[in-house]
Image 1 (cartoon, one colour):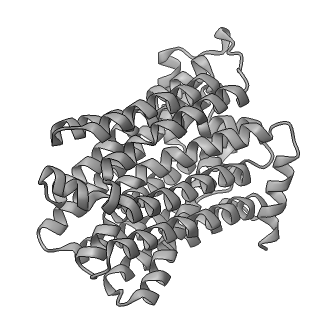
Image 2 (image 1 turned 60 degrees about the vertical axis):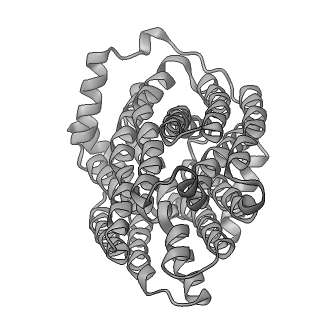
Image 3 (image 1 turned 90 degrees about the vertical axis):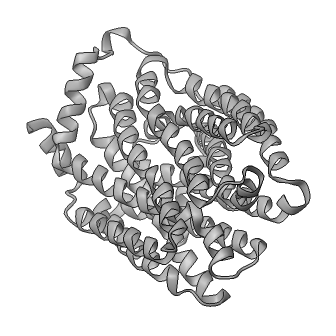
Length: 407
């Protein structure tokens, strides 16, 4: 089984489209890695600005909320200017945003910087998905899995490095130096991603766009998939925003060990994404997504019972498998959306589920400040259980496309 993802990756790298995959995946590595670097240094951020868990959770919610808000305009721009400009521009602007966060003199300015970071990275998400889907129409699940796995690797490496160095160099420098890789990958994306010609005659009017998205949302397959993604994203955002803090403050791990466990979560996620995308391309999405959500239920509920390093390794690795949902779900939803407004519709849907999901960290932070850290994980497990039921009723792509046409 493990040889299949490697085989799929080998096929990608022997085509002319290889550099598109490499450039988009590398950009995503730094976008997501930087996003999850922030939770790894939250203890230092809290000290710097003298805020509690709720204030720290608000900062993470601002990042995700701004990211969510930008999904709709980002998706519309995909259908207007193409992926090349959006991907390269997003990376260049994000390099500037991380500097704003790093030099923030007050908590309010820090929140503004977090909003800027969320907005600039928000341009990347829709273009990332549609550029890969267009480049690899026959293996979109596996190709998106490779891209998202790169993001998971970034989410493992950057927070781990930050947790190891933050005591010596401080969180501000760790964020500020990210300007350099963002500038480099921006140039790489501009060079690798083709400039797609947009036919003005094919552009949907605002009224047509609203109609197409409305019809897509009313399609049972899209509605179920998006609802399930929303529940899982809310739960995962709540867990990842505070997992290092929880392991340090409640379970008594030192920060280096906590950030190493946090890195393990994304290493597990990267492996799961590589496998899930390929398996779903072969056997269909429903079983892969249902199994992933079921594991998310059990792992979230198990977090409060962690006692010792070995149990923590097992539970955190299980939490990471939830990331397998993303490439499978993304490929499924993108493929069944109307082609003429694929980017616009996908962006608008992403705004919805990311905006709701952004509240996960604030909710968990509020629970934590009331001495209910453990109970928060049980609530997140219940939300993942709802997603499991929704995925179990998901139709095949062929059925979903037929319903979309006849609906």
